[in-house]
Image (cartoon, rainbow, N blue to C red; front, side, top):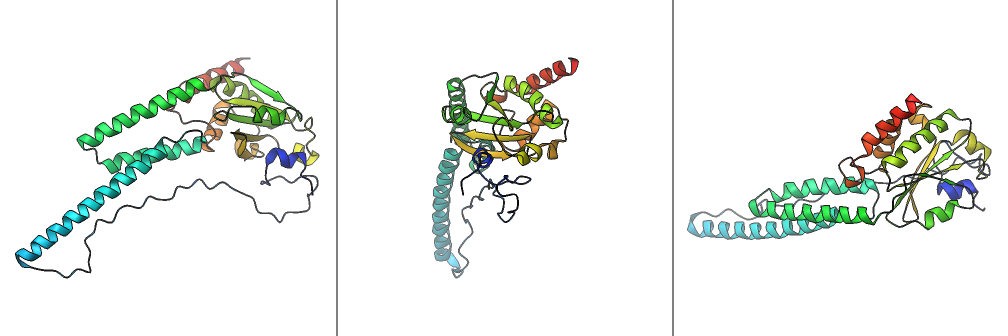
Length: 284
């Protein structure tokens, strides 16, 4: 059975939504993204309990040699973990939820290094390298500062023709819906606060989406990066209510991993920009 335009936009079945062609089929389980990190295995530094205890000089020498072996193995394991964590921290072109994982990895890296003098130098050099990478990546990103209005014919091209490093956030709305009005006002604030993110919107009915989705699925948010759908949030008013502020919408997207963390170069100015735009909207 051919996919409806609803299914092509959303990419998968989600809660609170069924297309007009399968309103009576509720058997498919929702799909979700697993963002949990596998815990890092710590090297085993305990002495081998199966070795029989020895006394006297010979036993002391043997225990000391065994201790030295364990220390050397521990150092090798530690160096390997440092390299793995450093590589994880410096990965680029990823959703912002992955950036949060990188921050956790950096914290583990710091704890692992135990802040000796040599380790402090290594960590400082790593931070300088990471900051240089972030700044270089920021300079290479295009600047948008506006909302792109899409339709059924431009939807795919506006996503596929964008740079792989650009996050594309699309609002699906419908006229006359209170929550959609709130979402549109929030989008005006966010597009100026996050100039390197491409904010778009598309009206459900003009995109020939089903009547069921136009009634029950909006407002919805789709998030793309490198031509791939990385997030879809349907009926966001069920979490935010029908009336919500730009700050609430910003926090909502951040908590789902679709906006950068507050301390990153991408987000150095956004909170004040969102507040200022919100105040301007209220005064009008």
